[in-house]
Length: 136
Length: 142
Image (cartoon, rainbow over all chains, first blue to last red; front, side):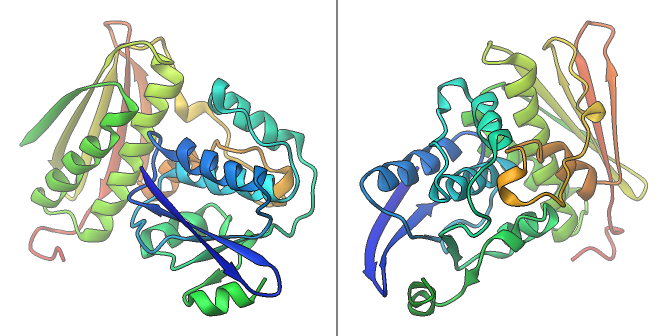
């Protein structure tokens, strides 16, 4: 899937990640991989702009959860073993419950699945990019 | 009336599965909200079949959609080794983020957004998962 990035400067450098398209079991790993690449090159504050993501299955939630753990300082998940590897990282736990990952421009269907699974409470959400960037 | 899609059990086909459910459920008179829920439930179920049933091996998924009175009934059939997702426990949604197992939300979401989920092994040695969703009357659908 097409994923673009942008750098912004607030009190800290903020990286904006934009997946373009629906996130499902076929492409959620690409979102994690891009976020991991950014982390490995020094990004520590990530704003995920979901303006162009009208739909997300639980696979997309796996991506958001994995990225949040990654930016909390957990070992990046090794996706070679698929879901089992990702689940193992989650079960390992650790890190702080204040992820440096925030969400921008949530679309209604994505908001719904995040809310239904209780994950929405773990992310600060914004509808304005300038405000979101300044929040870090 | 029932409509059936037979499609290779590949993650790259999930978008085609969603389009099929979207178009068929709408044609059967389901409201937009009910259709959205059915699309997500079938996506989650098909993903489980591909990931946990076939486990990367080639196979096929048959998706049959029909209307029965005030419900839309969807059967997903496959020939993967027996796998009953209805026996999976719900995740503990009270755990903090860093203590939650990643994943396991698919069957939880499915249970949450349809009215009934049942499983039976088929006589051919495969699996049949049935999703039932109450929908608006066609005369009152939005």
